[in-house]
Image 1: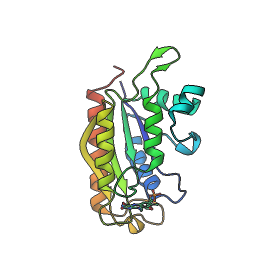
Image 2: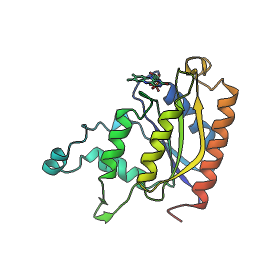
Image 3: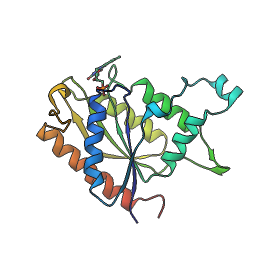
Length: 194
Ligand SMILES: Cc1cc2nc3c(=O)[nH]c(=O)nc-3n(C[C@H](O)[C@H](O)[C@H](O)COP(=O)(O)O)c2cc1C
């Protein structure tokens, strides 16, 4: 059975380096037998998490839809910017809301539990977003995900892509390929939907 893999670029910016890196991962995974889709957060606007909002109005429909999409996957590839050495608010807010979803269509769900997660980051800086990945790793582990060790960081991202948006940095390309291979292998062996 082919694995379902969701790619989540955690930037809304149109010229986002992380969206480009996510597209490269999508290209690599699309030539395998995996079913690969992308979660565009611009399609699922959410308020900042507030317990009163949840108590009064319940979990927003967009959070439920995101949780439902994540729950249907064997693996999730998060491609995220680094903000102040940590997780950008849109990603943390999305994870926080999705982690509140316990039921989809009346059935219990744990969107992140047992989910295979891979991490990648692109930054114009020289560390390539590696500190953000450490922070995401902690959050994903707290939610019961199986975060793979292999990761990809693209430093100096402003010059990391060619005019067609393809990854020009050879080291990052090799790392992204290794990450995608490992993610796919692990998703196949730990599939939640076998
Ligand atoms: C609030 C804020 C904090 C940032 N902090 C960092 C940082 O700690 N490390 C880093 O490498 N880049 C940092 N940056 C720069 C981002 O990496 C850069 O804006 C990047 O292009 C954002 O990702 P995107 O191109 O996918 O939108 C920061 C940017 C913003 C707006």
